[in-house]
Image (tube, rainbow, N blue to C red):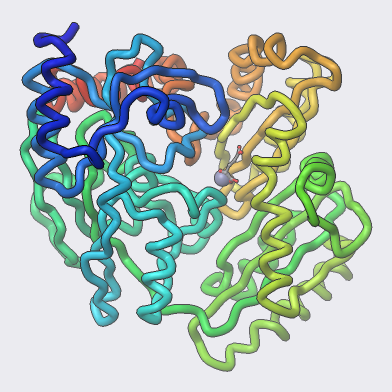
Length: 472
Ligand code: 2HG
Ligand code: ZN
């Protein structure tokens, strides 16, 4: 319940932020629904501050009025992490106007950037400075720095560089009461008590609003090779990963798995998507990259693939000959989510297991889901090199999408049981959002959840930051 009438608050915020700073009515529609269309929320207004001082003023005013705030980046969450509730009393806070690169230092190998910049724009800025910002996800053209950090996004390069939190040296955060914490340090060593920045990374906007960050950069690769391989089984894909990784772990930029059915959806629904060889039961996408000049990556990849073929791990393979071909091969991977959306309703399980157990995960979870719902179509794909598989399930052909989605908890629980037995996690990289808080007591109960609740209560005692997300 708000302490003060919402209209009065909105009036004050509008005066403070100006016409470019507040959206209302139909303009709020795109901010109220998530990418998967699982949640149709409502909001009286989307607030678009222009700088950190305005974010601070907004949070101060909202705290005084007792009105909840939902921070939103590019709104690409897979778990409804950035949408307001259906009640229509939560304000959306978009940082899209705060999109400046504040500084890039090629010696320190750091970038200081505002939270509303798209990840793609940050990558481009890094590249122009001769560096690489090493995290890549399918939604990077839309996803923003703030959302990527707030959700500790993973993506395709985790195998080499870790997740978003591994790239963060410093943060600027506005706390729920409007205080600004300027922790924009770019130190590689700074051992000074609790590591506060890591509290906000992965908190999904429930503790405060990230307004800027210092990110680690690495030298830009000078050689890069991408291969798509047809493989006979998931075990073969894993064997190929082990082989490639052992050969030169420092060069493995990405190693992705795709299933035959998932690739089939891409070929059916994505314009101009074509396979360079005959359809296979499983696929692996390998990317090698290095800043080392004359590293001979091409020859290395060829010889590793040749050995893998002799060992029966690879049945066919194509190495990209140009940047355009590299992009075309990656597109076959990156369009998986869109193709699954076009095929019909899908239930997503963003799970991880120890890398060695990925074949068992896919086999056992497929069997469990088929036993639960005959005709259900497993479409596993993703980051096999770090053990994170998107164990997604497409509705049985001809089934009513709503009836299928009504079974989501049963299906997710069936997958969860397999994941638990394999010592995995129910949320590898997409976070908890609004979809998965109900799973927290079972998976993170006891002391872990208790600590999280105490941290939340200490920083956001009135529960005004992104309510209904993360914590049950
Ligand atoms: C990816 O790896 C994303 O492409 C999305 O994490 C996964 O659609 C999904 O389930
Ligand atoms: Zn992913």
